[in-house]
View (cartoon, rainbow, N blue to C red):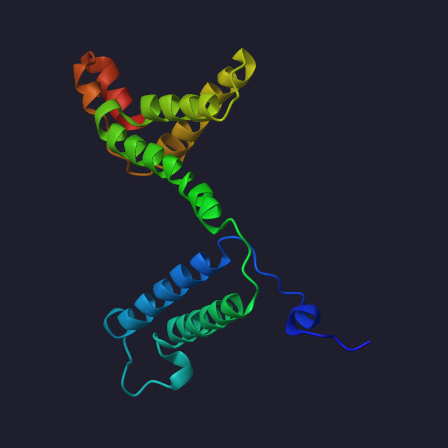
Amino acid sequence: MIAKTLQDMFRRYRRPGDIVFAVIFLALALFLLSQLGTETKVVKRTKWFAQPALWPTVAIWGMVIFSALHLLSSFLSPRIPGRWKEVGFWLLSLEYVAYFLIYVVAVPWLGYLPSTILFVVFLSIRTGFRSAGVLSLSVVFAIVVAVLFRALLQVNIPAGRIYEQLPDSIRVFALTYL
């Protein structure tokens, strides 16, 4: 049996929001392509396969070509209603970006441990996990993450300004490990 259309041959069916995604991805790929000359270097007297710019160039050109093909296939596919509803659904995820930015701003003020505990407990509640057991587990998880990063891995995370209000003996410990 011979396929009647390209859709039947490749089983590529357009989905709501597909063309919006294709346009955004092509724009991103073209922006990255425009930055190649300033962000990567071609080193004289170096073999082509050892150039620092080789693999970023290959990857970004791949992004441009395949995102252009994706956009073309989106234009050629039959339109499906619901594009803006799908885009609106995508935009809902920006809520969590806002939460993370608030967390990033809170860490220098409250400290890593208190901010992480508040952030994890808040996200647990926000996502619908409100039982005492889950919230307790969230607090334990936040403490383990904070201790792992600050004390064991010694990641340099700014200490909270709230720690300055602690007594001297506790302040040194909090500044170092919390």
